[in-house]
Picture 1 (cartoon, rainbow, N blue to C red):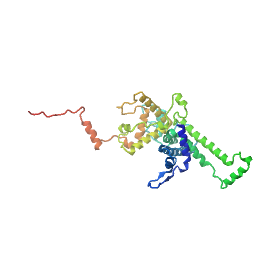
Picture 2 (tube, rainbow, N blue to C red; picture 1 turned 45 degrees about the horizontal axis):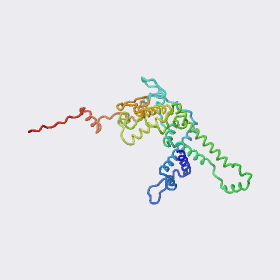
Picture 3 (cartoon, rainbow, N blue to C red; picture 1 turned 135 degrees about the vertical axis):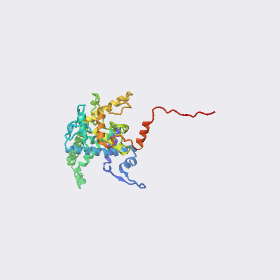
Picture 4 (cartoon, helix red, strand yellow; picture 1 turned 90 degrees about the horizontal axis):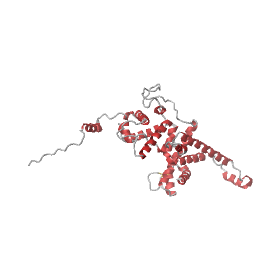
Length: 352
């Protein structure tokens, strides 16, 4: 609720100086977070509140870093066009010309192709990951980032600040006039609010906020999807069944799922296409139907085709199916040699 969110903003802003602090309590061996202890033990709030305060500290830090990165090269209006687009996902030539394909090139395919050669995370992907971390509390994260920016930019008080305050109190004519410190605080608040407002506007234009800010998107029938609501194109079963059949269980699966999210967040056209597909899948699920049959083991649309090509080019060591050796291969060979149907039970005749 708005009141709970406001309370979290106040707690998070209050505990900003101890955001990364840790201490070892008496009788404990492992250090504990000062923020967690202050919220749950001193303020007697829920453990969930303590976790949300720590989450907002990290989200605010990511928003601040994202703003600093975007200040270096100014605020881009859109990322719908990206250099280097020209080859299909996973297959390309050194000259950057399109590869031979029966299907014509499309903006989505060009956008996906430009991402295959990316070596660093884009600002758009950083913004998407920050929003996925904060989730529905992203507004609170931005507000905490504004508070942190204001407090960091304020000038330090002079050594004789108390004497200055006493002298101001003695002159009633100047009691209502703003001081230099007040003007500096006002300008810091205006600057921080304007910068982060521009950041939110850019994220909304990129479609990362869905219709949470621009309500008219839902009214006109194009609500989009917020970054924290988007899921990977392929789930773990589909990845191991036919996208990357040699992928082992464990950390490698986590890397593949994270690579999918980065691929989806990294470009506006790809993100919009994935959002449209997943909204269609949600609508189909509500109607009790599925856009993909259980037996289908191939991409069902252009988004899945591009994502599959990207994953196979990103993880080529897992793209080839198992060679049939080892326990899995032996089991598969045995299963393949087993006749279909239920085996007939053989019984011995009793001799009278």
